[in-house]
Length: 381
Image (cartoon, rainbow, N blue to C red; front, side):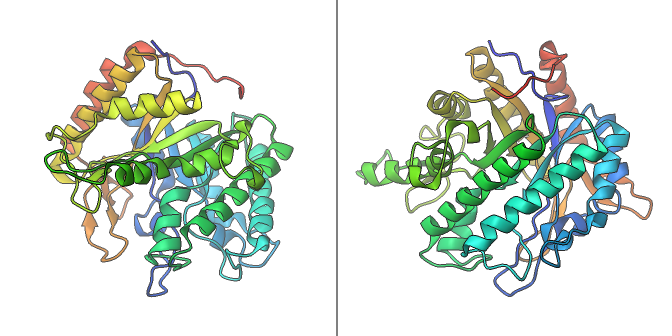
C-alpha cells in the first residue's frame, strides 16, 4: 500500500486559470471570470472549511509581462499572499494556454522568455514564503498541441502542426524547470496531461492497431520530458517529477466514434490506467483534474475515489485528487454557466453557494482516506 506524503491534504481544489485566445481572437481570463482574482482570500478560506488545504492556482503571464523583461506582479501578489496568510499550499500553473501578445510561440524566443519569467516568478515566491514550492510549468501540453496545433480551436490556431507545438512546449517546460531550479533547487514540478483510453469497438471488427497507436500518443509529452522520445529536445528523467493526470467522464472513446460510457464492458477501469502510467514512469501521480457537471458531481467523485483507493492498495503512488474546477465557471466558447464546482459564483460579498451533493461526497471520501493522514513533505527524488 502506498501512503501519500507530498501534499497537505489528499483532496485538492483547482481554480480554472485558462488565459488562451479563442478562434475569434478574444482572450479568456477565467480567474477574473469566476471572480477568484477578486475573492482569492475568501476562496482559500472556503476550501479550508471543507478540509482542503492544497490547491492548484495560476499566474497570468500575459498580465505580468506586458513589456518584455518587465514584470508587474500586481495580479499575482494577492493570490500568493492570500495563500501564505491562510496556510494554503499551492501548485502554481505558470502557463495555462496563454502568453504575452508580443511573443510568437513558434520561435525560440518563446522558450527563452518563458524560462526567464519562470525564474522571476520562483524568485518572488521564495521572497514571500519559505514553504516547499510546487509548479506546473505548462498545462496539458498534449491537449494544447491537439487543440491549438492540429485543429485550430484556440491559440496559436495551428492546423497539422500539433507535433511541432508539442515539441516547442516541451522545450519551454524543460527550460523553465532549469531556470527555477537555479533559484530554488528544492522546487517540485507537476507535469499535467490528460489520461485517456481509445478503443476499437468490441462488437464489430475494427482497426485495433490504429486505436492503440492513438492511445499511446497520450504518453508523448511525458516521454519527451524524461528523454524516452525525441532525446534531441534535451529530456532527462529528472524533468518528470510528479505526473499530473487529468481525467473526466469523456476521457474514453471509440476510435472515430462516441464516448465509451462507464457502464459499458469496453470501459477501462481508471485504476488500470493509473497502474499503467505508474509502471511506465515510476513517478508519483496526482489526479490533477477531475469532476463532472450538475448532479453527477458527487457520483463521479465517488467513482474516482474508489478507483484511486484500489490503486493505492495495490501500491500505485497516488498523492492526491484535485476537484477541478472547484468553482463554477462560464464556458470557454459560449459563456454558459458550467455547474462543475464545489462552489458556485460569488455574490457581492464573495460568498459562494456550496453544492451539497459534492460536499457530502467529499466529506465521506475524506473520512475514507483519513488513514493516510498526516503527511510530510519530502525532497525531490
